[in-house]
Length: 621
Image 1 (cartoon, helix red, strand yellow):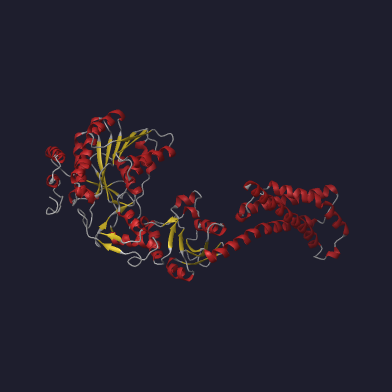
Image 2 (cartoon, one colour; image 1 turned 135 degrees about the vertical axis):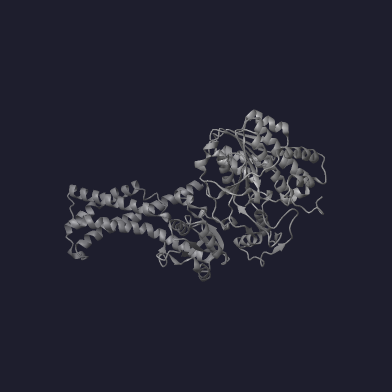
């Protein structure tokens, strides 16, 4: 029934267009002849009128057939554009040529000017009827949007903005009205895009948002720098409007610059530095045709590592994790995206010596990315023995298996909390780094560590927590107004890890230059604003005090480590710190035995191994 109704509507539409076209053909023919005689009908010679009407039925038939061939009855004229106009011109010119030839062959000759005037009038009439339909529909949608829709400001007057404005104007489903355009180019101010005026530069955003009663701001500037985007977002936040942004140049270059590609502005867009740029294609040759093992492959960092590695043709990708739900999701995603990838997913704990040894014996991974770890600081403060068992000895067992079974490279995922640690998680990671540097001297395997700050939107990070609190109406909880942290995106973290694998010579600790740290309270305010609320008014911020093991600021390098540049100026290498490996290995034996006995004072032993580890002994024995 629905198909019948749809077919009937299509038939009615085509009959209507054919009727209009027949009227246009007759009108164009008559007007072309009338113009020849200075618009005075009584001066037209009767023989020309006879020739015109005598050939008219042939002209109607051939022209309608040409219109059908050129798909003038197939297009959706609400979306008519340059392609449709080209088809109209081609069909009308060809119709005029055939008419001229046909009239002369059949003896229905006409004045010479007629043959030139006719196609001009025919193109005008046919185009007018087609595009008038589009104009009327758009006018109707605009009227509806003014009453019920969203007022939009578009920032950027380039091709990406042109695509987005055109789609908003054309669509009957987007109840939005583009009220104005902002661009910093003085040459563009005062000009129009699809009838929408470019009203000023970025410094007029707030004033124009009030003037045009803007509800939503779309940032369509995919090619500008991250710094410029941050500055524009900072201004836009003052308007209280909802912010959306076109993700980047890639979407524009692939023709995907559209309303559907606009996303909400996220706090990641406000990083206090430009994102780290790593040309993964140029450095990822070292994973091609290699057997790769990723431990903790179901987590935020581990799963993104797997995605990037899978896209660079490894011989075999092995994903290991103890949490089956997370790793299952990654498995299904990779199977769908890379059907030819040789993929093995294993459920295992890095704390299980026999299981880890068996995996290395069977699969012989050539490169290992060790991301498996307990990372949540407050939880580990309450379960310090588990942090040691999992982080320290899970790493040690994986390192020993890599050494025993001939792994070429081993990359440890570490953290800035390992520097002068004040919590057991950071201290455990510092011991892991010491294990890496110790075994690098004893083994043919190249062992390295990658140390970075907080990863935005990763599991357990502060941003997802803030988003949940905002969605619940607040309050947003901040531990201390002076707390500052370094931040990076998941993509940056993974790029650093992968590049470390390329640069690895053994024993290094790779560190990202993360620019200036960010105040967590400022981050909370930014996120509240980006969510469309007023900080401290509509959404409250509550100070709850530092949690166990937390400190006000994090460091990326210890003083002894120094700093060495790599080919990528944003990636640095900390020099290995000299330690007595013999003493260290004996301390590890003692620590392992102690952790099995579930002591209350394991922090004391950790302090012996990591002298820079500080904790409140009154509360944490």
